[in-house]
Amino acid sequence: MSRWWDFLEERTRQEVDAAVLLDRRLTAVKAVWEALRPLGVGLHEAERAVHARYEALGDRVRRTPPDPLDLPSLAARAADAPGRVVAVEAIWDGDTVHDWFVLLIAVLDSPEGESRLATVLHRRDGPPPGAAAAEAGRALAEHLGVPFHFASPDDLAPRWRADRREDRRVGEWQEGPTT
Image 1: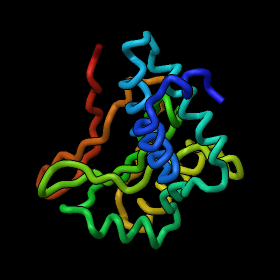
Image 2: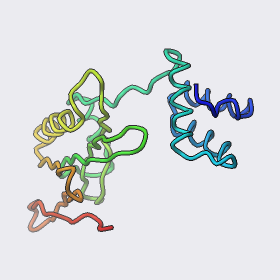
Image 3: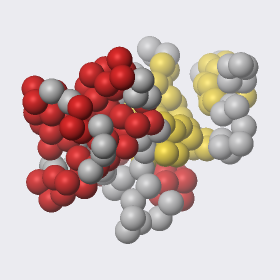
Image 4: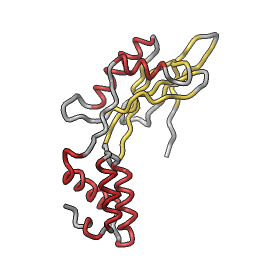
């Protein structure tokens, strides 16, 4: 158990446990961090306290199921997108909770934009997120008859953009933001 748990008020403990039981890790971390920040507790310690609660509550936690990666599910999500799908893209992302993961995105035209299809997290019993996303993304792109794009995680994630010229779609590199 985290040594900081004893410093939390009962109301905050209940709030944290309720969030953990619903697998809302970031909500739980925020509650711990805000309550203990006056004591000099940093974000990393708050994350460790919440991790300890996940371990303590074990099987009672209602884990959020992973996004489905099967073709019928992805095709249905693409069909529900608010525009015409012109490409499928996989993008590396990451955070302090999930480490590295991949977002599967439908690139849209009319209206221009994108729609999230799935978040591919690391699964203990499955392939790495990059491999799983690549397989699912290629299958969906082939099914939809559109290009698939997956930039290297070492790049600044050049993005796919559709350029309409005489009703032809032409893939072009669009540089990501520089920091």
